[in-house]
Length: 420
Image (cartoon, rainbow, N blue to C red; front, side):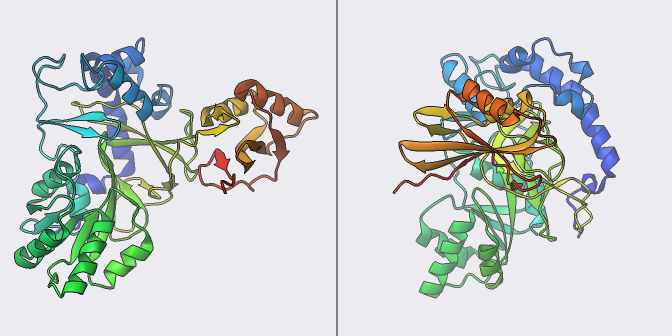
């Protein structure tokens, strides 16, 4: 048995990057030609010219709220809002969708007919699952795509699956005891519930020796708790829109990107790409011809982790989920957005980094814009304060702080108010 799902995981990084960039023109053209949404948002873009990350960075970021708004506006004509290149009779695409799912919003996502459509096999394999294993899957099999995502990936690895779904703890525990699965696939919290219930009832679940979890945070404390009970568990990072984005390996040092993902880390509220190591919003271009997302903003925060994975996988690593990028907050009845803070920085290039802190009690809010500066010309603080007021219609104190003193946590707006 090999430690790698396929040879792609060990490609030279330069070869991978060349392949990704070579795929970009065709991917952009496919999005423009096969979907009405990207035909509009990428109107006038020469797909043949998008052959580099710099060229890609010039295209607009599609954020989930915009995708939802378009779906809602076009619900009567196309439940996918024109983002899907596949569908069924009566839609523009006409055919090609095997299933359709509904995520909170609601947002509708298509599933195509390609084997392992969501590309989850790579994560499941990295978690130790192999052909012939029985995998107990406790993700939802209705409405949302998680159950189908994981099951199709497990089948691609060669596993048999038990479709446990969510809830019914006693029945699922009985199934574990009687079927003796080799591993668990589901949320980490439900695995903990199963293990605790087994201990409480004296149920034998010793067959469970590995797991692949997702859908929620997986803190090291819970990982260690499961390891102490002889269950070796790894996590994946996937969304219903993009499928697999990244996955954990036995090195347990960050998450390795999937081979079909072109990742950017951007400043929240903008499309501006940040240097490696800086925390920002995860933006992905997904090389999926059926649902050809271009610069899709996940709304999640992360950062690129330097260096290769010790397992020998050569793709870029990220630090994992580090919070949400949408830090929009309401101050004195007005919404303040991260994009407005970014606009302040564009007006004043002397600012290297900024963080808007909202403090005080409800109905008595005050804003302070903390700024790191490359240079501090006379009158800059007053000019920046005027820009904040112009852009947000709210007053803020401007406070220069030492270079490097603002945390590298992706926060552009910090809500430090008390609500007692």
